[in-house]
Image (spheres, rainbow, N blue to C red):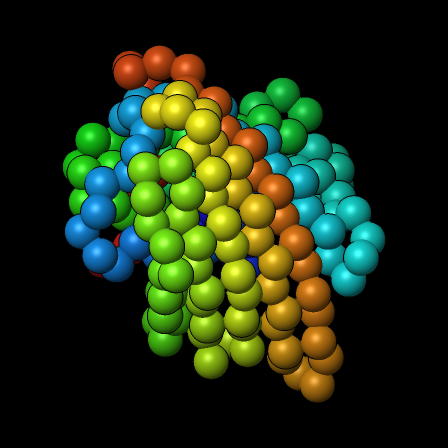
Length: 185
């Protein structure tokens, strides 16, 4: 959502949690989607090149590191699927009712230019991390959404551009043993 807490950062959590998309819902507007278990697929480009998917990153980890990473993600409410490409995420009713998706922490600010039942558009800035980006979420109904975001990050004298497309499909109202995705304050 690279405040989908995902948008933007290179950390494993951010990359896996949604490949970084910003939907920092700071107003109290309910998300137009169902609570429950969602399947998430993300594709990302960095500086015009397709970024490796999670399965490629996981292949380079030792079995112990991979197990630790997968356990950490599950504690945060994200289950890495087969090949690392598909993820399962649990959205709680409270998070949806409050209009909150995963958020970025710290100095980040998100301004929405529109928020309707079928589309949200925003601009996010995080001065301390050098991040600035735009995004759009299209809700084709309560069981499907697509998020497209683009960003520029300036750090260490380097500029990095990225674009992310996230496709999500509702799977079930019961999340099983997967706890709700962790959302910021």
